[in-house]
Image 1: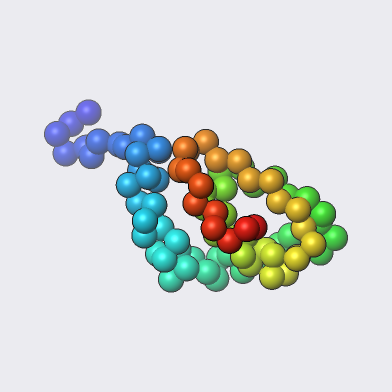
Image 2: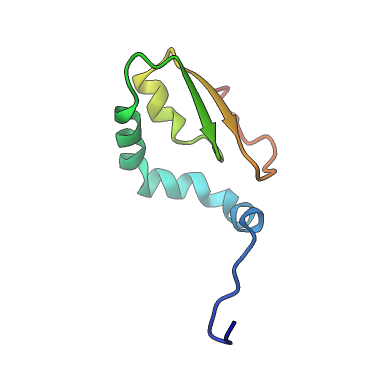
Length: 87
């Protein structure tokens, strides 16, 4: 690696370092994408497995469209209990 090549962070360190401002940033910059993802899910979907769910922020748009859906989220990064919305 040359001197000019930036050192890559471990994914855990990357996410944890940005956790405090993550949701505000994503709501400001990514909400349209979350709506589009929700639109792609078939209306008769009963269950979703969300791998790499992070904070689960995108689920808000999914639940608006599919309030009956059951979601299981799995995250490798140990981010603690950050789900305060009883999703």
